[in-house]
Image (cartoon, rainbow, N blue to C red; front, side, top):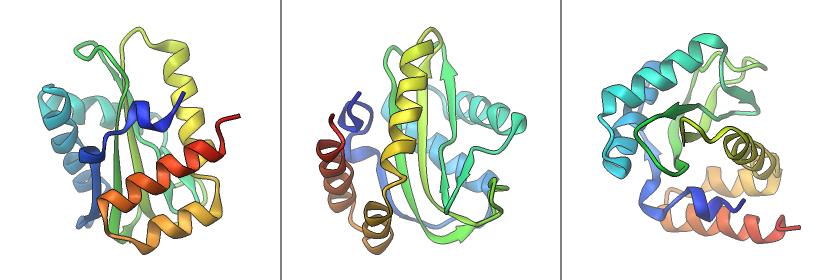
Length: 154
């Protein structure tokens, strides 16, 4: 599963200004609503419910909030680079500045897990993460994520 299948260039927010986890999730829901046509409140509620089960802050300043919606037909992603790191209750207690929101259709079981795994694997690359943190260009972020995809295609 390629990141390009999950993430369009217009789904990248290269310099998001937020001061809290709740505000971040709200902004991601607004962006996702524009891309999917699903009401932002529905998206926000789904990702907030998932966060209540346990933080999706996976460590090293990265979070992968996710949820399932009955009203979408394919897996969609939104990537945000935050201007300033925020507390996300991450597993390692480090503040988060790179966020990949993943939304999947209700019945996407295995594909949803494959997509989460793919995102986590790509964002484990420290060189890529350093590049992502140094740019505030959506096109550069998109290129970095897709170049990384080509490197990990095996």
